[in-house]
Image 1 (cartoon, helix red, strand yellow):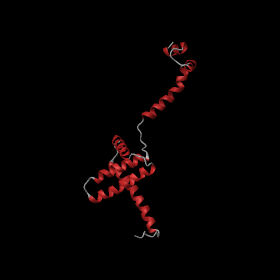
Image 2 (spheres, helix red, strand yellow):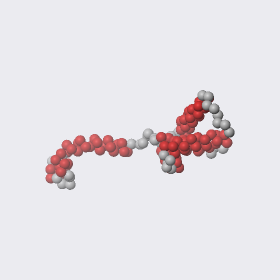
Image 3 (cartoon, one colour):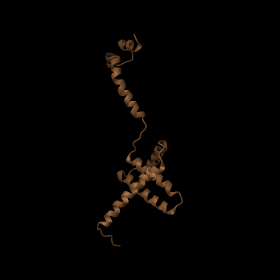
Image 4 (cartoon, one colour):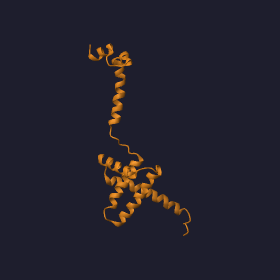
Length: 144
């Protein structure tokens, strides 16, 4: 008799339910345990919206440090936009911590900074278009 069966029948070190079910119980539970372990150990590929915004802040920060004054100004505007999105979701968000976490995830996943820059730029362009369309629909400019 295998050790598992002998231990179950004697009830050594196992709760009563495990002794009653014996090896059959473990066959039912084992797939659940393996699936849970696989999900916990799998790399996290889906980034949260905060992580995506953090990546944009990180990549725009690097663009702003390249030395081109016009690019630096555009990058600063983008950083403010994505910081506003983070704070808009939750005012208590630690933006620095989100950016560090997102940058670490991007590095671990070997994300291409150019792809991130394209994604972030597309979002910034869409937001800019949205604002421009409001102005062209006949909305009066504020008087100073």
